[in-house]
Length: 602
Image (cartoon, rainbow, N blue to C red; front, top):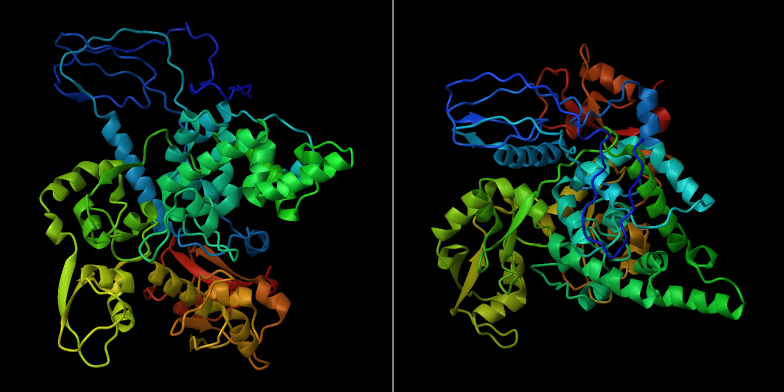
């Protein structure tokens, strides 16, 4: 195995491994042809081609056998599936875990690569030169620029063993990273940060920018509201900067840099503080000093999560070092996935997607900070667009005046209307209605008119808006819960604790079902979805924990009855979970199943 190269924190160059015998020259079969505009794929050729004014074009024998390709392994037995489900990671359901999303990202990356490889050769001559260094993918570049000291510690080993035995998990999170990792890694390199820092979103969120914890942490870097605000991450009804890929990455890097300086250049203490807070780490250091004990990370008594946080990152970096360049990780080329485009003013996201010739789903995945159907009217006025579609989007933007980027409706106020009611009806904030219509306070009069911005499409078209994410989440819960859903309207004096007591569930469950923090303050009129616990519908605790979602790939000879019997479910269940099913199954078709692993047939 190639030896690891270590780059000090004061260097910024990206290291590449050296090849043995770089002076060795390869033989090339050259045939003169009178074919103009011959296209050469520069990503796989083993020769450097210099261009000179002659009238020939060439074909070169190319060996692309070493190009890393993703080759995910499929599970073939119920026992293997059961083992996978039981050991599944604790991140839970994610809006990003769909085959359509993965395929879309791969196609957009391929478009970037194809565009980069188009080289027109009108007049060429071939000069045989030494074989160039191989192009590394982003995981290999990460490993080549590691800067944290290697540590031999049992606390690392337990996490290392977990990652090593969960290759499916590693492939899943590195697949999710395909949209974001080029930016995050190169930001770390530009700032001379250890590239292990770029791996933190795997620990924090599994590279899910929509991740939201019960402690109210949000985004790929999991900022809590107060810390996010402290680092300039704006949060309002329209926009949550904690989920902004660019802004949150820059904020996380700034925060870690400040912590690194605070702890006199000790990266492990800085990383521990990112998780547990600098106050917690400083108090632990003070306790050890007073007791005459060492004050390095490994000697401190910290909260359990923080005690595991640093070892988990070090274990992960070791796994990445071992698996980079293999099909255990989803290989990501060293090509930018997106480009930031200034749009100048508020814009409807479905309209922006059409202008870029991409889906609204893709717009939201690249711009997950936008909660609603449009960008924040007060900014930021930037959208991340896939590189391959940037020119299309910019051309469309030039042809679209600011006045047509959001649709408007003139509304006549009727008796019984209020700003709050209109904000719910039209999916806009009360503050926006006040600002647009120059209203002080909450009083509006029947017969007067208001200007209201409206979405260009139905709510369901905005696939990953805050409201649609909650709806999607609740659909998933509906399919797995034993009890029927109750739609609860918050009343005066209510709290999450009171509602939880009423329906015999936990505060954490209500928060999870409705994507809230456990300490969220409720507003009168808020709608909550609750799945009550009762003696007639309650599942046993052990059973509830083992009901998991899996994706089953149909094999030749399969039918719904056989699959239902194999996984101890009913044909009706499978049809309910997969509403787009046709009459006949096709080999390779994927089905979503919600399975109790204790009942799997071996």
